[in-house]
Image (cartoon, rainbow, N blue to C red):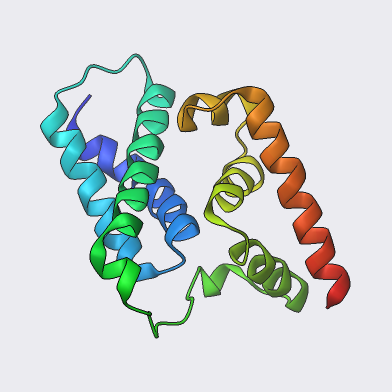
Length: 154
């Protein structure tokens, strides 16, 4: 496939996954850029469009993890507030739910995002994140429990 076509079809998907993991639009933009740069440099052959999407989300998640490991991110507190798709959130309930999801630890936040917002199945998420299916199911269960507790407190 053509590189430009792959970028055009997947840039929003990768951006949403990166924002979900980073909770920061500026870092997410860097992650997207690095992800597509790695795609350009990889020269990897893909079976189909779904294989490309899985590869891109895997690289984006790894880039997010690498970013969080850096000295800068471990020692600097960001003053930027979350601007995660403000236009898409219309009701107070949606804002509250999004705030609760973004308050989850990254390992729970990414599985919730991929499952509910992107519509992937447990097996697909497991493949993307290199986890077992049972681990994905456990993370989803724990994330739902945390969301339920958070929303009850509100």
